[in-house]
Image: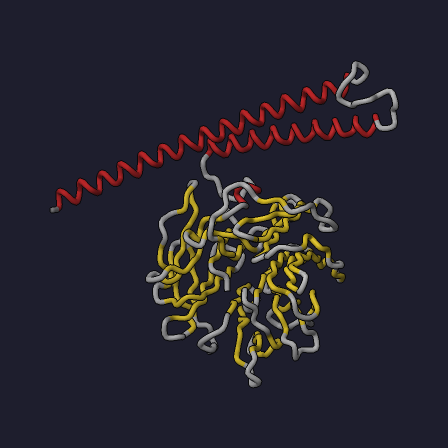
Length: 426
């Protein structure tokens, strides 16, 4: 199971779900540039829960209470109500609910007769299952009731290894192996509208390997080695504007390898030097917004284990991650985006001039010499747009600081008023 869930509704509203001792399953909503106060959704919940959604703003929280009874709640930021699951579950093992207009069904872990663990869907056994140190199984909803199930099969299975199945409310597909045999230590799967991406760590005698594969159409690409060596503790896969990011944790730091050619090759690992917490854990990312590889495609995020709503990395890599309801900040962001687009257009024009100049022996350098006025003009245009982009960045930072200052003043006034009221009552 995931330690937390980050969810985005169709209108862009962000939610965070996590477990807090004494408060059970808690929920926070991101609004007006900040996470609101937490509310307890299921105070009687024991550790371990799952969250799913129906593509809109309604969430389904599945958990076990302190006595081991499975319960389900449905609702949103305005409140939750109990639902009948319609069946009994074991007192342990993971459960995932698939909710759609075609009906609901559950995927659960159940103890098998041979002492192993079986995956059960719609009351029927799907397959034998091997639980890894990181998780039991993971499910990602593609659309409607179309769901992809990721898991490891045991050694006794005919297709021993790590792979996936596609299933819906009426049928279950065949198991498709991604990696045959033992060795998959950690993995991150990413299902988009038309593909499934796999990033996984294999551990052997000669060290760790980080591998990438992609299912597109009927085929599965050959495994690409992203990097080798080192003690990799976890991995994470996401796509921003058609750029694939393969990240992993090692020695307390996050390292990122980037692919600009649809996963055919990856650059060498670089340590992520921006804001990153000291105790990261994985959270599932549920999105009612279509996962478009041209913009953002992500199914998992890292959050701070001490503040499970604090999403790491993505807000810096993808500036539109948070819903922004401030008109001034939205206007600044639009201006910044326009300046960036103009700069990109100028760079494209400069690249065209570069290509045209190739093979001309009289040109020692594209950017120097009186015989290249067109290149000088484009270079000056790019420099001007870069300066404009920096100005927009500064304006955006100043606006953000002003908003934070006003928020601090409001909170201080609120605290002063509460203290004065306490004195009056006493």
